[in-house]
Image 1 (spheres, rainbow, N blue to C red):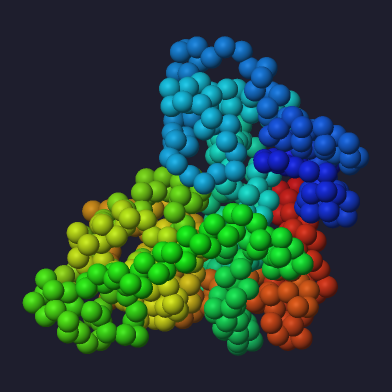
Image 2: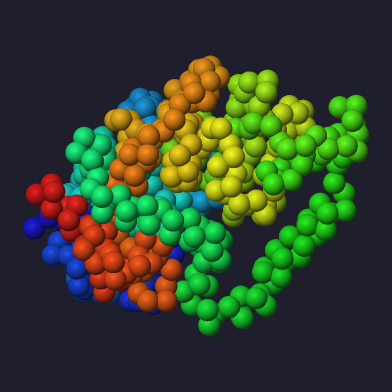
Length: 498
């Protein structure tokens, strides 16, 4: 019987384990595997031990305490062993859940990191799991994830990552969510082609996705308080909390400041309105007319863990904006769309935009798909917005590696390998038309290898809006819930290796 080791970072409570924890749901109903648990804190280990069904439970905190002295020889050894993983990226400021690595000074960082290496290696050898599930849901934002990922790769342990890109459940064997199953189906559908019905339902799903992305439910999912959508009865205590009032006050002050103190040469960009010409152009107070051609850059959230963990060399957003801006043709403008979850624009971005003069920021009221539709090329960085550009039929350039969902085999998008080549790549994309067959095959493959999060009436689930017509499609599982789907996806994924 195969064994699965689940890493549980952050603080756990008994109620979470009993009601909300997907691992407990898998143990009770879904899987027939030996379940092993690795907790971050010693207190959580004791909580899990109180429940039956887990074969063994280990604590990372306890193992780290047992690590002996770290000398220079050991530091040099582990530095060479894990050099290809660039784990110095954990020094980059990021909004993370775990804090152990950042409670020490910069001089102590190598020693602390080495302790984690020693502890994790001993835990993996001791528990000897067949599979290691590093993440469930979107719990990637923990500093132990890249370390544990590196240890598992060196020990040739099969890994499982359960993510939810675009509000769909996906199981992959890598942190980048580049699924071999999606890639294989994508190549197969390119060669064999989609049937007429498959094309029709895929187009319907794309339209449903656009509708969902514009909805209030999608905005709630993107916000930090997305859980309110599932439990609206808890909204009033949250509204009257001190933190909520403070955040709303700051947001209101910023909006008032922007409305009263706009520069003559505004950085806001709205494709439906005329651009304001600044005094420096010699045409102060006049409008230029309809905006010219532009390239759209879709950003991830500031200090996002996916940018730091997956593309650390592109984690400085200011540098990314500057590099793209100087690579554009003289006739084009760079329009930057910030992540919907971003509250305040960083001052460094605005300063760089004013200095470069060919950078604008999309107005917050601008529709994403309208921005994409009127652009010539879309650029994205470690984000599912890659798919947003593709379904609008635009050439998409992915900045930095790794590629999302399908790796690099016959991908319908372009991969930037070097910043020096970006200008040539942009010119190539401007002359390129993305075949509709590739986009439909890509989207169909994504849906077929993911599962619904909430397959219940009254809960937003964009692919299943027309439920009666989808009962025989591969991405539809009638009568199931999100946790059930995770168990089914894990079981099917593991079965491929047995």
